[in-house]
Length: 408
Image (tube, rainbow, N blue to C red):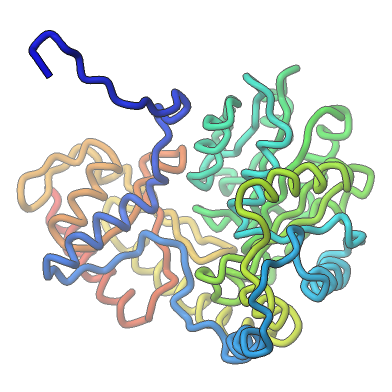
């Protein structure tokens, strides 16, 4: 090639511009790099259970493999799993879904992606209460929609209020995403909170509602989980109720999510799935069936451990100077505020101008990985996953406390 020739490379799609990895994964990857370098890193960045998948669940998958259930699975899921999901929805959530209103996918992420792809037109708006799970707005933007972030402050327990929803709705609003219990705050919408939202949604029939209930079994302090489709049956045909086995049954790597919704939406989502990933792993589906049918005892044991850790972590962070910590009522995260740390310098002389600076300095100076609240739409906070061994959490709290004490 001479100097006058121009090198031309195949182009990527314009939609890839700004399509970033979720901050939770990015921070976890940085922690892994340091760990590979020999550093004693503690990562509290990823929201995945530290418990082993229950043996009865593993046995379900193992037996399915031995029996030859390793062929291509149905796009919508095996009938045995769909029946178990149908039973779970009815008995635990009070929702009646027909079998053709239920689908299985490769995690709740795929459920949401399929739903948005099936419904969003360019410039459609999706209302997302903040703090939010990082992938919500990323997916919306990727598919041509506009995420509308509605900040839910700590004084309101990080819960979306009806007045905020009403103010955020426009003629372009296509979806409302609700996640209770919430990632990243652990907030739980009460029955009264949800019924207030129903009054607004009832007079806006153009809006779909995505109810992400993945943490429903991890609720504490006597709180109860309420499924929106059960509370407001008149809205049921507009509600997509999404769930999965990763959090409840310590099965994040098995990649099984599921949803119940109106037939025409499920049918559209399955068209997308049939042309992308096809059906979810056959062995994983057998394991998920076993989980839904036989692993409730293990769930209660894990919940007790999470509750113990929740209390210890909340107490530890509340005792640190410059940090406040709202007591979460669900999931396995705390979301401490660090406003009192902003503007200070670390022991190694780094200025803490925001929560991103705090998280980066904490990782590089003490080898503890957390995620800044800016990634979830509300600063200055940190999201800390306490789905880790008690000894590891105690060591992490000691390091963070020393880091905070060193700020000046």
